[in-house]
Image 1 (cartoon, rainbow, N blue to C red):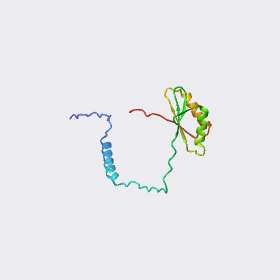
Image 2: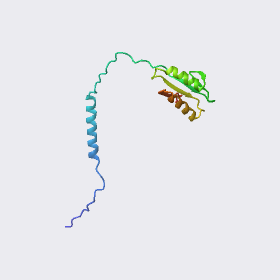
Image 3: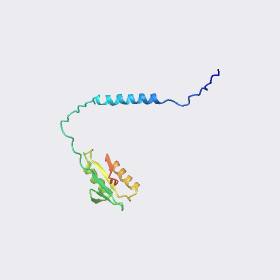
Image 4: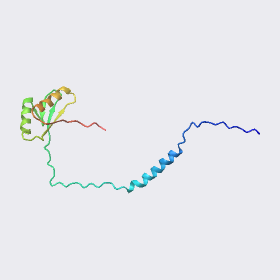
Length: 133
């Protein structure tokens, strides 16, 4: 009697079916328990009075020909600094925004910013037009 010998093959693949079963069971558990959890309720404090409205910012316009305007009035640098000092005196929260023409060189804008910072203007910003879209 000759017996047929079966050759043993090595298993070269990983059986992923048990992993899929465990994953699905965990998914079902999370789907069932998620609606049962209560989100934390936050009790916000009440405010006695509304916040003060900040003053509208002063607008320094730097045109393509390097001329300066403060709130629409043409001025020289010295005049502008004097007017800004007068308007910001005693108002540390007063902000100044620079609206520069897009053809103005970057270094000219930075020089105006430096001038404002040297004259104790704490809040200096740039006025930009939002991109379309």
